[in-house]
Length: 334
Ligand SMILES: NC(=O)c1ccc[n+]([C@@H]2O[C@H](COP(=O)([O-])OP(=O)(O)OC[C@H]3O[C@@H](n4cnc5c(N)ncnc54)[C@H](OP(=O)(O)O)[C@@H]3O)[C@@H](O)[C@H]2O)c1
Image 1 (spheres, helix red, strand yellow):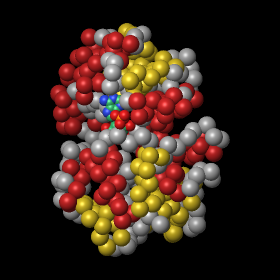
Image 2: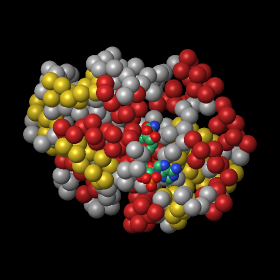
Image 3: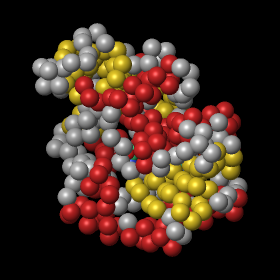
């Protein structure tokens, strides 16, 4: 089968569309004929080797972290799916493999595709929407009538996060360039600050929590936006000890490393009387089924920036890597 294979950590020249053996489903796994696969920043970060401390993949490896497609075969013990089912999934992080004609997915990580979506739109959902849901519902425990700041919400995660925060009943402020302003307003943002002209910390104050999608300079400036007792969850800042233990299931070595690396961030949070948590999302078929129900009920919109053909996989990755996608970038396999 055809697949996008990473042969060495580094630049895009170390990835290529190559013929590789088709995988076989083991116990509890589905073999999926992939119709579309979503792209995410984790793909180019993995390619560059930036995540090796967390996932040091043996190379060569088939890349890709989320997909939609049709179940071609099931492994022993699969209970909930059968050949012919249309499914979508954030694939196992230890294996990847979505940028291929066939991929294996554990049945616990898969759900039936929303009936109202085509394959490219369904492939855009799993990783970004699960991240937004798990951050807002499970980590921030966002409740109705709270005020949340979600800086930089025009990309893959943010377009879902605005909508989920509104579904939870919150007031949402975000930042966007003029190219993204109409989009975030349509998705429900109550306050939009043009980050190319204004500094958000001069405009916002007294917020209950923040969902940080940008890290870096944005994270260093957002503390003053929150009121004492406020909560910050980041997916782009510095991982901390809970990340190592709870999200990655790792021991004290990685937790200690993250403790040191995140110390300046946690001290800044403490000085402002705030809590700080870095989240790594996890695959979940149950959460995906819930998201599918929201999509079919027309409560959650999937925003697609651009669909590329499978043969344009490297161009698609380069496009996402510019950092300016509005919504999701997707590969259509057929
Ligand atoms: N920890 C986890 O489990 C997890 C899961 C998913 C994603 N992530 C991380 O979360 C981050 C966001 O992911 P994503 O998929 O949403 O990325 P994305 O789709 O590439 O985000 C692109 C968007 O970010 C906006 N943006 C860039 N810089 C900005 C700034 N300074 N202020 C405001 N907006 C800005 C861009 O708008 P303009 O073009 O208008 O600037 C663009 O629309 C990435 O770092 C990703 O690796 C982590």
